Each structure stands twice: as structure tokens, then as C-alpha cells.
Amino acid sequence: MTPALLRPGGGSEPLFNAPPATLWLSGILVACYGIFRFLPEDAQDWVLLHLAFVPLIFLEQFSQGGPGPSAALLLPIVTYTLLHADLVHLLVNVGMLMAFGAVLERLLGATHFLILFFATAAMGALTLTWWVGAQPLVVIGASGGVYGLMGASMRFLFAGNVNQARRSALAFATAILGLNFIMALLGTGGLIAAANIAWQAHVGGFFAGVVLALLIRR
Image 1 (tube, rainbow, N blue to C red):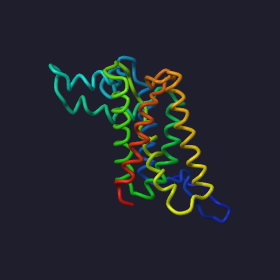
Image 2 (cartoon, rainbow, N blue to C red):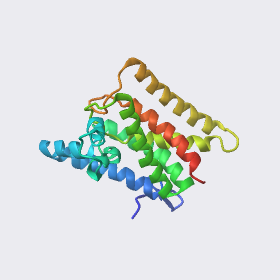
Image 3 (cartoon, helix red, strand yellow):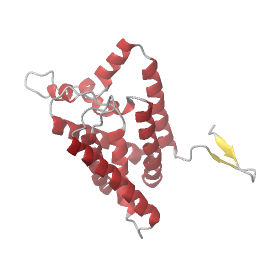
Image 4 (cartoon, rainbow, N blue to C red):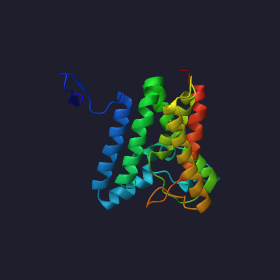
């Protein structure tokens, strides 16, 4: 049963006013974080080894003499979105997911919304890999997919007259991207853990979202 808040008129409205796929994905992220935090240290290491995205491990499967591509080695390109470094990292991503995901799911449907999220997350990971090369960085977090949803929403900001809400959303997206470029200039990017930010994945996910939204029919 969906939680609801009672209104003075006797009706009710959802506590979280978001469509189902966005709610379910947000709930899965929260559940994965909670489960991961309560795992023993050796189990956490196993999860990071098999589900986090590590550019070095990802590229080794394609190298000469490497093990060759396999589902187990390709899967982290999307499963890294399910893990988060800390509660702040989780809440920021879930908040942005609820904001941009709800809009896109209503406009495009649940299937296209999920395709956008995981495809842009994968493109974010590939962009990071292209930038840093075969580095043993442990990359976790839904930021690549969340930035992809933000980029995809740009398509609809210019549908019709650009009102104040659209200008505000565009200003927000511009500020966030600008912050990522500042991180690039300052050299604070790298690995999404211990307060470091993989700005390359953010930028790659954002522009992948812009392109994919143009390819998806409304």
C-alpha cells in the first residue's frame, strides 16, 4: 500500500509523489546501501571486487593474454550504480534520481527511463576509463546514471516557451556541470570514494543522456 498524507478535505496524496519505477530504483539503492554497511569487512571487499567498476579490471579482459570478455567482468559497468560510499553520497544521488527520474518516467515511460539510467551510467564509466586508462580505481555510485537523466531532461526544457521553471532547471544543470569542470581543473577528481568525485563519469553520463533522449521517441 502506498504511504499517504491526509489532506484537510479528507483525501490523500502520496508521501513520495514519484512514478513506480523511480520509487523502486530509489528503494533498491537505499536497500543496497543498508545491506552493504552491515556486511562484515571481508564480504564488503568481495562485493567491491565483483560489483564495483574498476577500469584496470575492465580493460584487462580485452587485453592480449587477458581472460576475454565475460558477463562477470562486464556486469560491473552497471552494478557499480548500486553501491555508495556513505550516506551523503547516497542521499544526493537518490534526491537527484527522484527529481529527474520522476519527470522522465512520466514523459517516456518506465522502460525508457530505466534504459536511460543504466545506459548513461555505463557511458559514464566508459568515459572515466577513456580518461584515466587502466587504473586500479574503485568506482561506485549512481552519479553517472543520475547525470544522464539530467542530460536527458534538457531535451524537454526547450519544448515550447522557456518559462521560469525551465530556466531554473537549466541554470541548475549548468552550475552542476560547471562545478565538475572546476574539479577537473583543480585535479580533485578520480575515484568515487573517500570524498573523491569521478567528474569524468558525470560529464560522460550527462552528454550520453542528451544524445539518447534525442534518439528516444516521445
